[in-house]
Image (tube, rainbow, N blue to C red; front, side, top):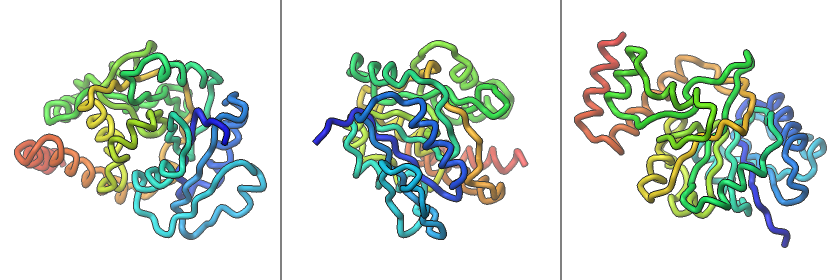
Length: 262
């Protein structure tokens, strides 16, 4: 059986048109000959991605029986992955740069590296906000509300830098570490599962790196358009993250802060 260096895992939900562009960019930009694989987990139970295997014969499609969320679907894909490094990639992204070998070299040369985040560019051609950041706690949230955030310094960095978290939009993880951590916490339906994974990786003395030399284009939010539902999902995940990592007191203050900010 051939050795796989990289497993690219994409979770699809109502993003068929963007998914085709994403896959095309992978084949165009990632030059690893036969040493990578692509696994698509389809969370859209109303669409079975008919014909996608004809356009891209080498991809593996896993049809999920129900939509249990982003982390759960990525875990399902990771169970099938054979690569030494996993790339979790949103379906509404396109890979821009051709330097995947430099990413893999980071993992090979730095045994302390656990998670690496990409530079993410919007369709307006600017660096997307909130793709990397500092430690999340109540002070961090307060700072964000008053536009005094350390996070901005992270994503505006033009050089490789160690950060507290990187976005799951385009996130590389050493497979051995991912399995050691038990994958994404599936109690997060969407949002904060990436921050939680980074938090747990650092508890095992693994580094989280923002790596702006590798870039992807992001058609942001195209598979999750209901803003009211999106906000509710964000707050539920934020509350769970605070309860899990920061305790009852900070979680209660967070809810009070949110209540009085409206």
